[in-house]
Image (cartoon, rainbow, N blue to C red; front, side, top):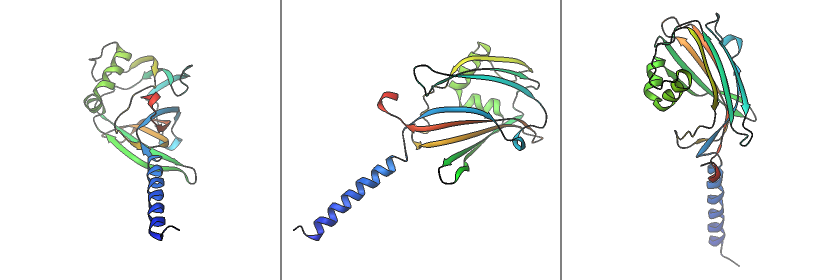
Length: 198
């Protein structure tokens, strides 16, 4: 027979390995799998019409996790630094449903902040919409169009995050008056990054 200390040591090693595996299944390097876009609930939507958006999404034939979007936007207001972008992330729990306010962010002076903090994304968006990566705010009222935008983005910041289903709610709010100008929701999942997806 083995002494009790050997059993305790063996049990401790097994528990440590099981706990490490459990933690690794909760968070780590991830890839983004885009779900679908949706309108916000009525109480979060603007009271007046400040823009009209139509969009279509087509799933990629090879990689079912990738979508291709095209959109048309008719804006009735000037887009400039008078607006604040507000984001709210909700996480899904199989027992309790959506857990609101998992993560919140606010970006005042949305044009300058987006251009400063997300330079690469900003330049790609300006090239897609205006065919000019150096285009800058303000954007006058008018018609804007973009086509064949892939959701296959290599997001590496933060480098690790919790796996699961998420719902992102984004609003554009007039900074001075507090008027809601726009509100949309997007659903997505963060899944473990595999060697094939790197």
